[in-house]
Length: 95
Image (cartoon, rainbow, N blue to C red; front, side, top):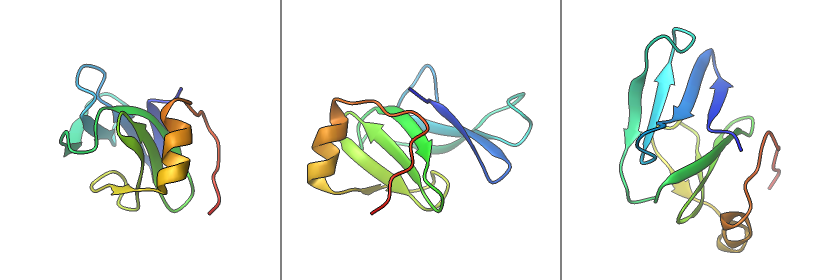
């Protein structure tokens, strides 16, 4: 289970006390800033760097971001249901 990833010289994580927030750090984790906050996608559970995008499992399915976590879009419904009950860690997905 990965709740923090490194992407484009930033650490990106799920806020440990509020899983509706995605945060980033450019100071190796010394300070954190909110990049995304909202509940419409459910609670974030896992993150993985998939090259040009970030994939996230949430309590509402699989979502992807091509903006380093600023915005999210729902992924394939069938694939989402499979991952809703399965956590992933450092896995690359190809569609």
